[in-house]
Length: 405
Ligand SMILES: NC(=O)c1ccc[n+]([C@@H]2O[C@H](COP(=O)([O-])OP(=O)(O)OC[C@H]3O[C@@H](n4cnc5c(N)ncnc54)[C@H](O)[C@@H]3O)[C@@H](O)[C@H]2O)c1
Ligand SMILES: [Zn+2]
Image (cartoon, rainbow, N blue to C red; front, top):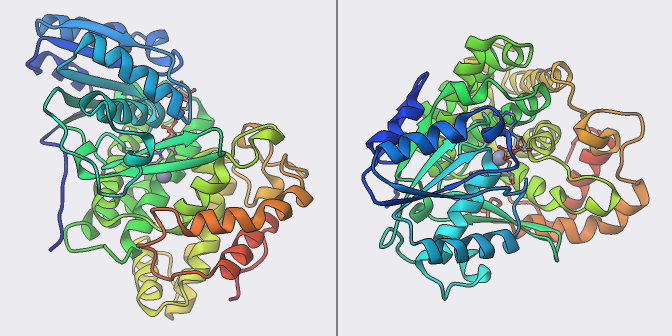
């Protein structure tokens, strides 16, 4: 038996933030990130709508990018004092993911972070509060997914929490919120969405319910992402929908090792100046992983189907897979994303010398490979890598070498 779960309600289109007026409850806690929602007036609007709905409102502000276990525990404490019956999370993937984990701890105070990490092992939620998610970036689709990614700063590792219990009750996909994104964020979150759709389509858990969502998302991202990056407001709005469709697909079809590698490299070099931003990591690793996975017959034919849907040409399956890889690398170039870790510089821009030194990368390679293999996203990847293969793959991602194994 398989399960397909989405939020009960999804409001979309310009101005749909107003749907907050329809929520029924008495106390809402609104969780936001570093200030963009406040700066552009969306936070005030949301609070106003919730008050119109007759609710008392409290804020949790300042949730950091790549939220930590500590932030989650502190937020849950505020929730247990305020006792909200609605948790409204607004912003990028970071504040929404943090709010999802706070929600678990609020409903079940005895739960430890380790308990939360048990894949599809969460206790029942919704005895205290329901959850409404409002994305302001066009990538993670956490507003419709069963996932939350939390960083353990002590270990320097990102952990994906996964369970349909944390699929939000209500999602509000209002394109107005995405219009204020800086270009770099459009690029990174957009390639994250492309990775979600492609990994979902080749995942071993893909099915008739997820395939059409994934393929349509891929086609839309191909048509809209680069123009959105270059300032086209209509395409920016389309991308907000496209990333959400990709999320519906991967929440139910799961992901693959591009994400395993992104999770395990993301925070591994933060002592050398920066995080490897999630979307940029995916954009760099995706072409390499396609080449690796294409040794699996089913994956190869599915990548070829994607190439056909994108009208990339090619006669044989092998040609089609190569054209897909080339196309994705071309997108990275148009979006000013480096092709490999060696050239990954501060802020995610390409540079001759990136911030991860070669000797440090090699020193940490084995541990990263072991961690990536044990990531929750590895199980549904079409080809299961050995530790040795994962090390080789990571080296190709460092040097931009061709994957021929
Ligand atoms: N839950 C999931 O299913 C899932 C899937 C993929 C990734 N993730 C996780 O989500 C996180 C990344 O989320 P993200 O890419 O959405 O970025 P983010 O939430 O980390 O935000 C990045 C920055 O963009 C700013 N920002 C957000 N929206 C803005 C807007 N509209 N205008 C101007 N600035 C804005 C934020 O203030 C922040 O400084 C990572 O931790 C990643 O691992 C989760
Ligand atoms: Zn992702």
